[in-house]
Length: 317
Image 1 (cartoon, rainbow, N blue to C red):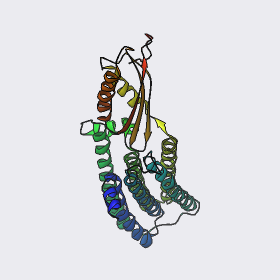
Image 2 (image 1 turned 30 degrees about the horizontal axis):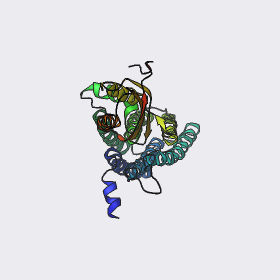
Image 3 (image 1 turned 30 degrees about the vertical axis):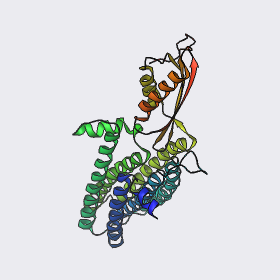
Image 4 (image 1 turned 180 degrees about the vertical axis):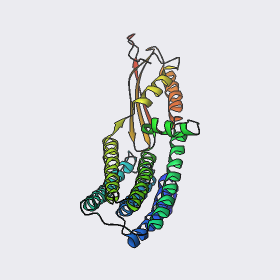
């Protein structure tokens, strides 16, 4: 139990915050839907419930993935967060289907909802809370990428560097971006349905929200399927390769692989050195390079192999 509590403290904070906020939002939306019967509110309730479950599982997965390697699992548990995310998207997929189905029924047979003021108040409050979580996720993405900015550029840079974010943070960003847009769509549809005879607007909003949920499911599934298999991080390969080539004793790099497992990076590199070097000198080079590479964020282990210089340039900066 003590080990579990220690691991939970290392879990992704954005995912935990998002799970708590979405749980509160889901309860409020659920109560509003029960009273008003508004189909757009139903879509938003399902969306928030899906996000709550998803982000809670993400938090647990990110925490458990920090567990130290054991004799039975010597490579550690880095890919556990990817496995948890693959399971979590199934929940969102089921809720997305129900959301689209309910919206379709409302388009075919539209009915007038009640509780206009309640719907608007709940949706506006929920959208503000979702945008707050989205803002926190953007800040965490830029923190991980060591980028400092503010204003509208905060969103632009977060979107541009989304691929470099941790799997859990990326999921929170995508889900809350969709949730914020979905909230705005629901508000517009409720206003249209109340002030016009276009009651189908709520059903259309429900279908659009469900479609956006399916987009997140597809994106997260593909990203984490690659993570489970073991995906190479080409950007880090280039960065570490350039770092290694700065060492005066390294003549060339024959090959470098950086495998991403969850939030962990495993580095394997083969370098060329002067064949006249002694074993002691080679060992000093190895220790020096390991220290530099291990200082890079996310790197958990390094394997360095040596070969004699062949005077053929392989590494290109």
